[in-house]
Image (cartoon, rainbow, N blue to C red; front, side, top):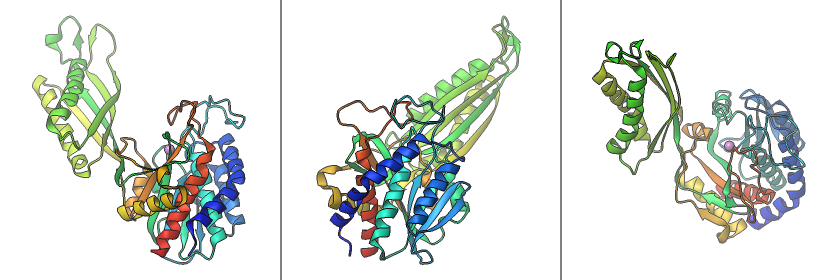
Amino acid sequence: MHSLPAIRSLGEKLAPRLGEIRRHLHAHPELSGQEYQTSAYVARVLSSLGLQVQEGVGKTGVVADLRGGDEPRLAVRTDMDALPIQEGTNLEFSSRYPGVMHACGHDLHTTVGLGVAMVLAQLAPLPGPVRFLFQPAEEIAQGAAWMINDGAMEGVEGIFSLHCWPALPAGTIGIRYGGLTAAADDLEIVILGESGHGARPHEAKDAIWVAAQVITTLQQAISRTHNPLRPVVITIGQIQGGRAGNIIADRVELRGTVRSLDPATRADLPAWLDQVVAGVCGAVGARYDLTYRAGVPTVHNDSRLTQLLESAARQTLGDDQVVVLPEPSLGAEDFAYYLSHAPGAMFRLGVGFKDRPNPPLHHPRFTVDETALVPGIVTLAGAVCNYWST
Ligand code: NI
């Protein structure tokens, strides 16, 4: 069996080349669904390693197999897309494309995926088959579904992934058992009243007043009718209505996001929202139209696979570099879609600089400490080797 220290020294030897790859990807970011250059680049590197490569899986995704043909497989998924943000880091390898930036670290994720392929290709013959999924369009929560529809999960019995995390210092790995990220659903409520003169409200049904009541009641009711240990966040982020200051509005549109961690709580939310909105509107004779769109489900880490990540990180990096995270995040991650096909686990890769402030993900000055590359690669490569040997 391959020793994990050997994996670590392989990873360290590759570090300079991986740094160059990451900088190339960082300088050439592409938006969700448009990862043409990125996927062609990824496919070239993977082909040169001798993997069996399929391009155009899930539109701009790439699937590559080590020991293709064999099943069941273990999968490693990394995402490749960038964000519509103007980069403000002043790095020498800043984005060359105005208004597009790798502000979520997917350049680093892609590089980690390539690094794991390089390490495992050198360890061949592997004790079991591994499939690499280079996914497009994570930022619009669609790429995972595209890849699954194109068969990327066929024969896959377990899947690993990672996301960088600036709140943890580079060199560390954040592990979490159970819930890692939230379900994220969309909410749209249209309040329908009756227009009238601003001077004579009693002759109208004021949709703006009703909308204000709906927003306030939702925030109060969620705290009084839901178990506070099973959190739900409702944010109304957009409100539109009315025509002039002296005309009573007959229509107001509210749009929001609903985040939750517990699947049973989530299942009850559409009916609960309808009940609250119906109550408020009914009291004043207004009508409404409520649309609840289920989005990405929660990422629930499988305990066996999480254990494999944790022990690989402890063996390659040392116990003091592994942080067991006490809390999930209410952010969302489309890795969740793979988990309805196979158990999986995702970890947080520390990318923070120790000696300066670290802007958050999706910030124009977000950047990563590249020394995180090797810890990310050896954790995944080690977990894959341990998977086939236990
Ligand atoms: Ni991201």
